[in-house]
Length: 578
Image (cartoon, rainbow, N blue to C red; front, side):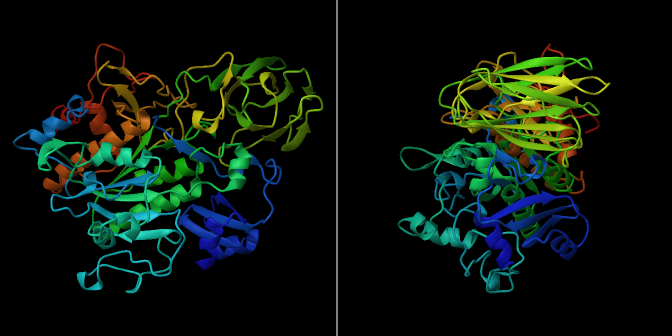
């Protein structure tokens, strides 16, 4: 395990998520991997020692490279039926007995918003992946209280096998100190993760005179909390995808390990888990078949677990193009690149079983010749007049998706209008899609001149079994300006439902997912009170939310609102057969 801990955190190792059901030793021998770590029956992460940086993505096909995920929020309780459940004489639901789990930029654990009325923390566990690992890692209460810790049988195979894990006892001890952050030096420097937890489960707000007020800030203000502060993706992945250094960027491995840890916390505490994943990516074919999406599909089907995701904030950004070409002809796709863009990637995905080839023309007219239409293809082109490089990879059958994917990486290339000529080689529909990176992964504006405003649901929001939220403005009763429109590339209905977009510093579909997570905690609490009422999982809560959604005269479902606006109270009073 010490080797795996080093492999995950050291920049000298590269990790790949692989579907494999054989033994770990078979994988290690077959692939000559330095370390293999199994996450589920069908998923392992294998690590290889490569001290040299990956250059231009030429060593590996892009289909097996880990995807990178960014934040899905950008810098109202009554509208969604939460207050009715809170104030009703027969409900009084606040999220008691439910664990809310978050994977994001961390939490400012000392805030009043995350404490009980006696001043103790509601955070049962905190895993900071960014901190250096220490041998003395206490993960629970004292042994005499019946909980595990590092010195009382805690296995070194535990999910939090790198970074630092802090227990409720450690957090409470820190809260009694004059400066809690000197005792536990873990904070949310950006504020994004902190805002998510407040939206989902912020507790009583304090009045100016110091007395406790009656107003609650989050949807489930008495829920228990578990938080993962994700570490940033390694430099080789940032370089591969040309992601700016200042962008928050997280690799699939750290997100999946975070989910694995949250599941272990819920099991240890004996609590149902509502998981909030307010992260997203335009990498992949937007059908929910990335490694992370498939993993979350499995988690979402566990009884007592609900997985909430965000649709994305890509609406109106010009980052999607869809085309259809007759066999033997071509279509020209134009990309406008502003000054200040150091590099970016674009991904073309065929609709099976179609096949495409491309050629490219730079802003100055340099031609990158048409690539072959058979087998796998990897090549780097250097621009003679303008400088910079363009890497092109074509996988006839992508390992993770199964259809053809063409990956284009621009590095140090000039601004202007780039033209991509897409040729249809097959005899079928000739349908394809191209996506540019999510907005936080671009250093300046890059857009298609003729974009398609639909099919913008980010992974893992495009996964099949998760509950995907879009965002709306409660005051204007209108969708959030940048909310991603559906459906998925394979025609499934996403987003599922709309929730409030948040307010203050952060707004967007990430905040809507957090609000939805807090709302799901209320449903779990109600089910706990009626023991045996129903075995809840993501699919059941999705059905309850859709059945109770508020809908106007618009036709539903639709690409913007999904099945309507979240109304948790309506989920109780309008559910068929309740």
